[in-house]
Length: 323
Ligand code: CP
Image (tube, rainbow, N blue to C red; front, side, top):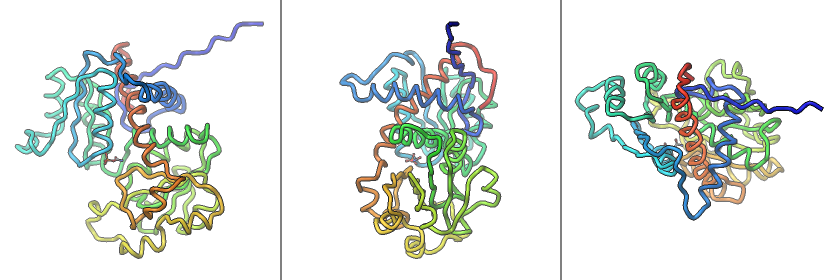
């Protein structure tokens, strides 16, 4: 019998800009690596030397609690040095562009820039202008790849698989980078994704991403293994097109009654921050089927995996692709 040799998965990406640009195997590699790092987080000494001597810079042009802190903890667990730049107190206030800021961070010999920006495509533009790695921590309405990965990681931990799962995403699909990253990642791994929102919050052509669409919350829940509840993004609602908050909760809010009506145990997720009483009731958010805080913890392991593989790509001098 011939001996089968397992092909070693290669990571070639200089940057992490979106799940759209990763293959099925890239995503599995990140999830499997995150599994090993997740175990480290429960040890007494939660630190490994993988990124010793490396410097990670958090460059956030938008507010963040979970993503910024999670990246900082992830980098520190890997023994990297971490610098946080608050754009309000940096030279961004004097008119410095994102590209110039990035090139100066590179000149300061950092190895990775984690960037959050309100413009879709900002992380991609920065990645094209610096030789060091760039991680998209959320760009406008485009993608939030590490949130997508940590959501998928949490589902895989809970169900042991992604293929064949029915995942419903409810809420502000139109403005949601989290929805886009989840859709790219989940469909690549074989999940069935349904999105549910009022018409004005469904972007035209979303079906082309391989999802089904409904305005009926009961239909969205009846076959769901998990529901990912999105935050209503009032800060992006320049034209005030959202329905009134109470009206939204009445029609689309995730409540105990709605989950009970579906007649099955539905795992409840939310990327945070939560608007209690607007998209989700407190009882559901804090209930037995909620994995919202597990998502937050798992985010550290996923971000450790991302930082680890980006650093491996640099070490191996395989900076061939943007993706
Ligand atoms: N989920 C998420 O991106 O949260 P923050 O805005 O707090 O980073």
